[in-house]
Length: 120
Image (tube, rainbow, N blue to C red; front, top):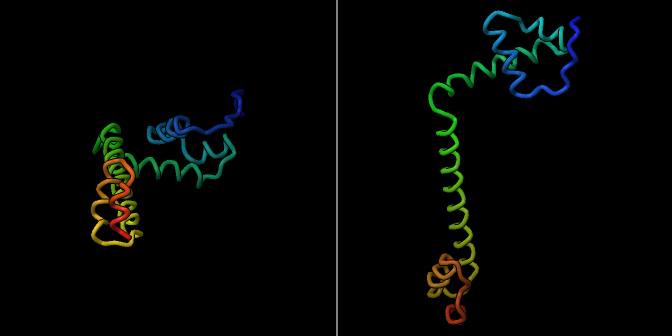
Protein backbone atom coordinates (compact mmCIF):
# COMPACT_ATOMS: atom_id res chain seq x y z
CA UNK A 1 0.00 0.00 0.00
CA UNK A 2 1.19 3.48 -0.73
CA UNK A 3 1.12 6.44 1.64
CA UNK A 4 -1.09 8.41 -0.75
CA UNK A 5 -4.56 9.45 0.38
CA UNK A 6 -7.33 7.48 -1.32
CA UNK A 7 -8.95 9.23 -4.26
CA UNK A 8 -12.63 9.76 -3.57
CA UNK A 9 -13.67 11.58 -6.72
CA UNK A 10 -12.62 10.12 -10.05
CA UNK A 11 -12.81 13.07 -12.43
CA UNK A 12 -12.25 12.79 -16.16
CA UNK A 13 -8.76 14.21 -15.61
CA UNK A 14 -7.83 11.50 -13.10
CA UNK A 15 -9.30 8.76 -15.26
CA UNK A 16 -7.42 10.00 -18.30
CA UNK A 17 -4.15 10.04 -16.34
CA UNK A 18 -4.68 6.37 -15.44
CA UNK A 19 -5.51 5.52 -19.06
CA UNK A 20 -2.43 7.37 -20.34
CA UNK A 21 -0.25 5.50 -17.85
CA UNK A 22 -1.83 2.30 -19.12
CA UNK A 23 -1.07 3.24 -22.75
CA UNK A 24 2.53 4.06 -21.83
CA UNK A 25 2.93 0.74 -20.03
CA UNK A 26 3.50 2.34 -16.61
CA UNK A 27 0.57 0.46 -15.11
CA UNK A 28 -2.09 -2.10 -15.96
CA UNK A 29 -5.83 -2.22 -15.34
CA UNK A 30 -5.21 -4.99 -12.79
CA UNK A 31 -2.76 -2.84 -10.78
CA UNK A 32 -5.07 0.18 -10.85
CA UNK A 33 -8.06 -1.94 -9.81
CA UNK A 34 -6.16 -3.43 -6.85
CA UNK A 35 -4.69 -0.11 -5.79
CA UNK A 36 -7.98 1.81 -5.81
CA UNK A 37 -10.49 -0.96 -5.06
CA UNK A 38 -12.10 -1.07 -8.50
CA UNK A 39 -12.98 -4.03 -10.62
CA UNK A 40 -10.69 -4.71 -13.54
CA UNK A 41 -13.71 -4.36 -15.84
CA UNK A 42 -14.28 -0.75 -14.68
CA UNK A 43 -10.73 0.27 -15.52
CA UNK A 44 -10.84 -1.60 -18.82
CA UNK A 45 -14.04 0.33 -19.71
CA UNK A 46 -12.12 3.59 -19.22
CA UNK A 47 -9.42 2.35 -21.58
CA UNK A 48 -11.98 1.19 -24.17
CA UNK A 49 -13.86 4.49 -23.96
CA UNK A 50 -10.62 6.43 -24.42
CA UNK A 51 -9.74 4.33 -27.47
CA UNK A 52 -13.19 4.93 -29.02
CA UNK A 53 -13.04 8.67 -28.43
CA UNK A 54 -9.43 9.09 -29.44
CA UNK A 55 -10.23 8.95 -33.15
CA UNK A 56 -12.65 11.87 -32.80
CA UNK A 57 -9.91 13.92 -31.18
CA UNK A 58 -7.83 13.64 -34.31
CA UNK A 59 -10.70 14.45 -36.68
CA UNK A 60 -11.86 17.80 -35.31
CA UNK A 61 -10.94 20.22 -32.64
CA UNK A 62 -13.31 20.38 -29.63
CA UNK A 63 -14.19 23.96 -30.56
CA UNK A 64 -15.39 22.72 -33.95
CA UNK A 65 -17.55 20.11 -32.24
CA UNK A 66 -19.04 22.75 -29.98
CA UNK A 67 -19.89 24.91 -32.99
CA UNK A 68 -21.52 21.91 -34.69
CA UNK A 69 -23.63 21.17 -31.61
CA UNK A 70 -24.64 24.81 -31.25
CA UNK A 71 -25.65 24.96 -34.92
CA UNK A 72 -27.70 21.77 -34.55
CA UNK A 73 -29.32 23.16 -31.38
CA UNK A 74 -30.26 26.36 -33.25
CA UNK A 75 -31.81 24.29 -36.05
CA UNK A 76 -33.81 22.31 -33.50
CA UNK A 77 -35.01 25.50 -31.82
CA UNK A 78 -36.12 26.90 -35.18
CA UNK A 79 -37.95 23.68 -36.03
CA UNK A 80 -39.66 23.75 -32.64
CA UNK A 81 -40.73 27.34 -33.27
CA UNK A 82 -42.13 26.38 -36.68
CA UNK A 83 -44.01 23.46 -35.14
CA UNK A 84 -45.42 25.76 -32.48
CA UNK A 85 -46.64 28.17 -35.14
CA UNK A 86 -48.23 25.35 -37.11
CA UNK A 87 -50.06 24.11 -34.03
CA UNK A 88 -51.21 27.64 -33.28
CA UNK A 89 -52.41 28.03 -36.86
CA UNK A 90 -54.21 24.70 -36.86
CA UNK A 91 -56.06 25.60 -33.68
CA UNK A 92 -57.65 28.54 -35.54
CA UNK A 93 -61.04 28.09 -37.16
CA UNK A 94 -60.72 30.02 -40.42
CA UNK A 95 -58.30 28.85 -43.06
CA UNK A 96 -58.11 32.24 -44.76
CA UNK A 97 -56.60 34.00 -41.74
CA UNK A 98 -54.28 31.21 -40.67
CA UNK A 99 -51.38 32.47 -42.77
CA UNK A 100 -51.82 36.03 -41.53
CA UNK A 101 -51.94 34.95 -37.87
CA UNK A 102 -48.93 32.68 -38.31
CA UNK A 103 -46.93 35.54 -39.84
CA UNK A 104 -47.93 37.89 -37.05
CA UNK A 105 -46.88 35.43 -34.38
CA UNK A 106 -43.65 34.63 -36.25
CA UNK A 107 -42.85 38.34 -36.29
CA UNK A 108 -42.95 38.28 -32.52
CA UNK A 109 -46.39 39.65 -31.84
CA UNK A 110 -49.79 38.35 -30.99
CA UNK A 111 -52.33 37.92 -33.76
CA UNK A 112 -54.28 41.09 -34.41
CA UNK A 113 -57.93 41.39 -33.54
CA UNK A 114 -58.69 41.65 -37.28
CA UNK A 115 -57.07 38.29 -38.10
CA UNK A 116 -58.91 36.67 -35.20
CA UNK A 117 -62.20 38.16 -36.35
CA UNK A 118 -61.66 36.86 -39.88
CA UNK A 119 -61.27 33.37 -38.48
CA UNK A 120 -64.71 33.40 -36.88
